[in-house]
Length: 86
Image (cartoon, rainbow, N blue to C red; front, side):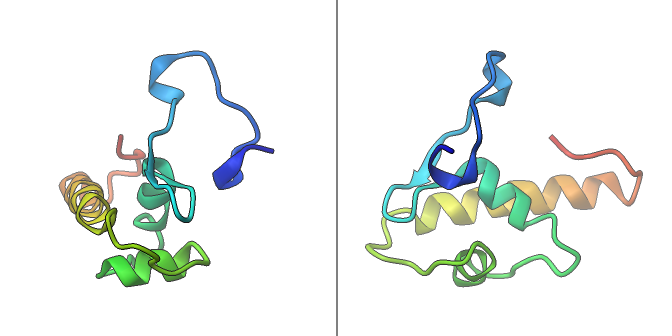
């Protein structure tokens, strides 16, 4: 198993994940997945908690916040249409 709980990396470019937190080996996909919870996290600290870790050096906090905002905006734009946001 690869870091971040990935079992393999698939060949199409869109299936690659970017590590955004090297201390906890969290990917952008991990953050987006955490934001798809029934009660999505409202802070970066809650994202870490959802993913079973905590902030270490803090360098990734701005990037995680940006990914959170994008994921939550995409979910809001979908308005419960049933399609997964990309």
